[in-house]
Length: 302
Ligand code: MG
Image 1 (spheres, rainbow, N blue to C red):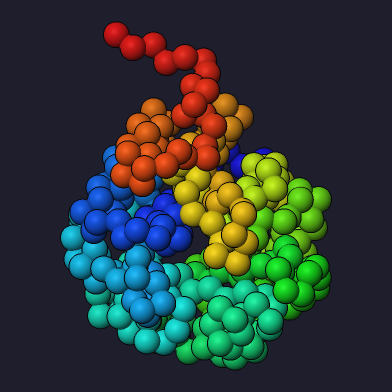
Image 2: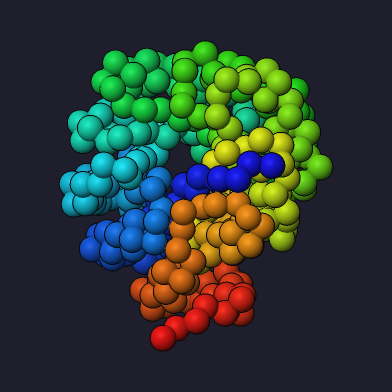
C-alpha cells in the first residue's frame, strides 16, 4: 500500500454546486483559502458551465481572478464543453478537469451527447489545452453504476479509459457518481483499468450515498489509486440521486488515512474548524463524523 495520497478538495465546486441559495463569492474564496491553509494542494475551484443552468457557478471568472497565487497549489476548473474550456483558457487556469458519464442515457441527459461524442469533444479540448500549456485530467462518471441503465460493466469502463488515455491526461478519474460502488467492484475496475493504461495516474471520486464510500477509498488505494477527491464536511451530491448524501468528507478521509499511516499533508484540526465554519455559512449540519466525535487520540492543547 502507498504511504502518500493526494487529495483533491472539491467542496468549492462539487460541494457548493448543489446548494440552492447562492453562496457569496467571498465565502467561496474564504473556503478555498482555508483549504490551502489546512495543507490541501489541489483544489477544484469552480466549473465553467452555463450560469443559467448552474447559477451557483455564475461567478467562475470573478472567483478565479481572486485566487491567491500559490506556486505549490494546483487550481482546477471543471469544463464540460468547448465553450467552458475557452473560458478556463482565457484565465490561464493551472488545470482543467473534463468529465462525462459512462452511459449514453445518463450522458445525453447531463451533457446532451452520446459517450462517443463526449470522447471526441474531450480529445479536441485536451489537444487545445496542451497547446495552451494547461494540464488536463478526465473523469469518467457513473463508472460503477448508472441511475438509468443499471450495472456498468468493467469492460465498458476499461474501453472508455483506453480511448480517453490517448489524449494524454495527467490522470484518469473514475467516479461513483451515484454512490453505488462496493469495495470488490472498486478493486476489479481499478485493476482492469490499470492493466490497460498502466502509465496514467488513477484517481477516484467517491460518494458515500450508501455508506460504502470510505471502504471504497481503502479498496481504491489498495488497488493503486494515488489521488482521491473529497469535500470538506462531505458537502455536495448528485442532482440525479436526490436522497444521496454527498462526496466522502475530507474530514473523515484524512482521519482514516493518517491513522492508517498514509500521509495526506493535511491538518485535520483545521479541516474540522472549516467544517464547523461551513455549517454557519450554509446553515445546515455537515455529514462528516469526526467533527462531531472528535480526533483520536485527543490533540494536546497548551
Ligand atoms: Mg461528487
